[in-house]
Length: 306
Ligand SMILES: Nc1ncnc2c1ncn2[C@@H]1O[C@H](COP(=O)(O)OP(=O)(O)O)[C@@H](O)[C@H]1O
Ligand SMILES: [Mg+2]
Image 1 (spheres, rainbow, N blue to C red):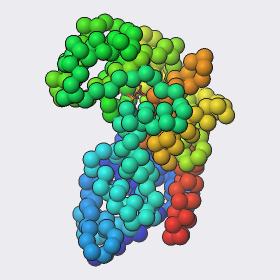
Image 2 (cartoon, helix red, strand yellow):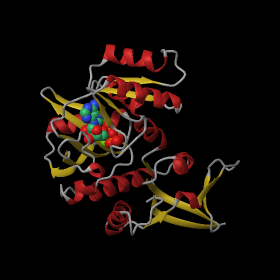
Image 3 (cartoon, rainbow, N blue to C red):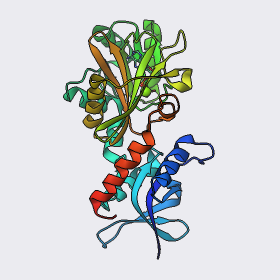
């Protein structure tokens, strides 16, 4: 079979003309001397067999030999490709298990706790657990948390479906809806962030950018898709320490750490395994691409392939 060698393969399902991030990473790689190509993960498959190493094959009939992989397409179509790359010893950002752990918000909160980080008080329950249906769970929630509370999906992003619940009946309806749809529940202490939170971008053991995200008046969500506005933010040693500890807790090489600040310091909300960082670059003026490509080059060098 024909073989195609590429320094950096970027996996993405979106067309670069409509995706700033894909374009930015390809440009950053090329301007730092790497060959870089975009692949839709749905065009690639895996051949496993007795050879000892899985092969990545493109539907056009050639074997793809990346020196490194950057994944911009979290989820089903890439999971096996990431594992195949790792088994082959190809540096992969991010690797599958860290991405999986980070994407699951309750698993990642527990890993943050294990590193001494502060996390919001959170109740998690799966449908089928014998904790007494929506009435029991609502009462149970009230024993642990005071109203208002935050409800959010187990694996969401972009602030989608993150809501403040001020009313016990509304909370009960939410729990009913989740149990009815056979979905896990996530109910969290409401933290008064005063209208803004913080996003820190990390690469390896460095913070490469930070922005404060200011919510629209009356909204808790600071996510840019929900009307949040980014403003540049300095990286202090304390902020850096918390963000890097959070990234390491879930073992992400490239992460977007979301934090809320209070009088005692920082509370970690989540680690994003496939973070957007356009505003960190465009508004914060942080050279994320340079940090990322330097890290990738270092990882390639460490494999001895370059
Ligand atoms: N416990 C909380 N209390 C107050 N605001 C919160 C809480 N959790 C999340 N938020 C806010 O909701 C938005 C989404 O939060 P996040 O947990 O990062 O989910 P997502 O993955 O959707 O970004 C952010 O603006 C964040 O500041
Ligand atoms: Mg977030």
